[in-house]
Length: 181
Image (cartoon, rainbow, N blue to C red; front, side, top):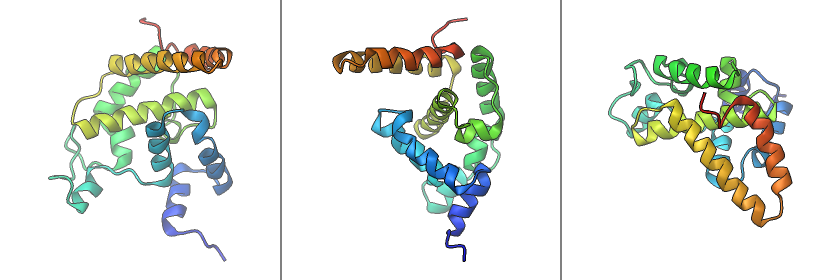
């Protein structure tokens, strides 16, 4: 007998992964970020607890189910992947990083640490912009990532973990996070 809830089954179907892979991704949340708010965001994304305006409107938290950027019905998938303005934002980021992602990789990650780290931070940035009712910009995203690298470096230095910090960010910087070209 299959004891998984309908919501859990939908998450697995949406992510196009098996439940053991989802369990592994949940285990890796601590590895993907030191920041509690980022961990919380990733957990909510994986658990299906983030909402677009369509659900927020149903719950009475928004005046309209439409996208803030294009006036289409805003599901979470629309907000993070399908909206034309977000597609343009992602294209700018991916071009600079030389890292094209499939929609599923962009939404949930790929299982490769560096790719997941960046993909999930892009999603968090887009979701924060929605929450703050502002338009996202690629340069702001790169500035946020550079700031995160700097702050993590200060923490790593205090904890005598600078070698691990540099190894992590050297892998991530393969994707041109901190280059201005």
